[in-house]
Image 1 (cartoon, rainbow, N blue to C red):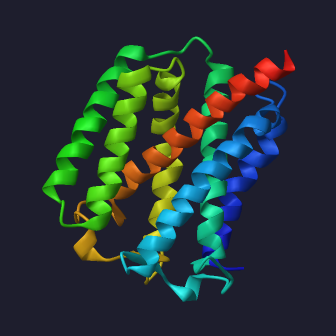
Image 2: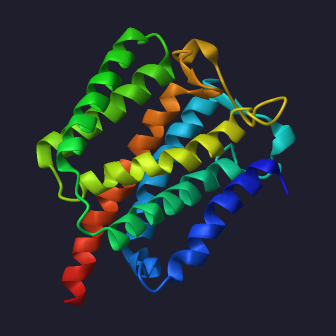
Length: 231
């Protein structure tokens, strides 16, 4: 089994087997989660295909299974389903065990800082395709969602995102070469800022934020619709 496939499997296995925990009963959220992951995952796969075809990033075949879908490694396609699943699991665990935890003031300042930071970096490094579009997309979507709608679940999302950053740094560190001679995923240096957390481009933090915010936003929207149908 390829290293990248192991990363996907281990990221998914724990949350999946804990999905049947009596307090969280995460499996009951599958009706809203699966469509959300499919919608967002499809968009990010399309984005990934485009960037891969244009040499903005690529993959080391040494750490892949050799199976490809849409000209992407199977492992890369799975990434957009296993990582959101594990991340939304953490989000729902936080809500289940700490239902009254709602740091709205912290969420406001975090959101404001993230949006401003994304915009500043995007325009400072506008020559880089991943830098500009990845950072700009994260800033715009966050600005519209939070400052336009201010959803009640947003503070808990921010809290869960901060927790998710711990496994994120481990997983992305492995993918970007923290434990291997050559990275599983490589980046064209002319399309990124060059600012890194060890081996991880700073863009990946915003990219991950955008993906998870989109998944949880749609998950919460679908969850309301499922609840109405069942009641």
